[in-house]
Image (cartoon, rainbow, N blue to C red):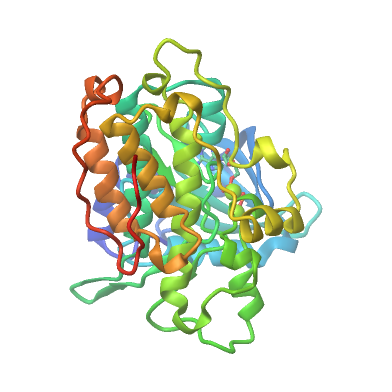
Length: 370
Ligand code: ADP
Ligand code: MG
Ligand code: MG
């Protein structure tokens, strides 16, 4: 039986109440007693796993179930969740990992997680619009989670390597009841530092460069031009590209940015251009060759301070030149600044032409803002 995530008392305290509840449900050997686990309702189906709302000794949790064919993804997700110091308010809460025999006798694999009642960000935004401060808080939270994931950390004798997520999408962000957000689904994530950082000429080169969700793939991934010589930076830059698209999807549903107009229906990035199932080749042409990016709505032509700042932030995340993109840490600062702008400054101050001065990413071309 596998049980990870409770390496030290310190770590345990950081996991918060629901994690401790599950600890109580665990037997003296530290394993979760699956006899007390009930799967109640199917809540999500991804590429590799099926996710259920469940209950463990009457406590609500989420369970991601992998068939034996996807054992590899399970092991990877478990190993990432089990990294020291990974607990963070904006990363999905991990409660344990288990292996058991399915009804047909074959092994199946379970990841036990905190349950996020509002589901994924994409689902939430398709049913709800959000005001400015909520939208900033949601996107800022995801960004904080990603910045933390990307950070190498030493604390006492514990070491957290820098990790690339490699599948940043609005479906892999989950929403709490208070609408704060966490980054989830570490099935494709990869350690970038420490024991096994990636190498140029690695046998896993293809695996390193071509994963993720096609819609959110950065131009250098689509073009097979990922810079494997500096794999650590390159994979972080790929994550930030997708983060820019996630901002666009989110702020298109922000009611304050469409004063007097109906808020447009939710759309995934490039949905208007390529529909629901874009192919790798279509994405290669649109994003890689034509350098196309999601269009800003007409209502965003207004050059209020907030809109200019917001558009600039998205463009600095999805820059064609990977090295010119913001780091997740820098994006976090930008989002923090946006959060501080009052809704009053969002619109109708076209005459205010004072420029926001942000630190430019190294090597970035300066952006002209009208
Ligand atoms: P996959 O690796 O198969 O994509 P995910 O971990 O992304 O699996 O989960 C698939 C979907 O299930 C998510 O997009 C989300 O809608 C839902 N989901 C996953 N985990 C949770 C959770 N802890 N709470 C609520 N919903 C979840
Ligand atoms: Mg997923
Ligand atoms: Mg996944």
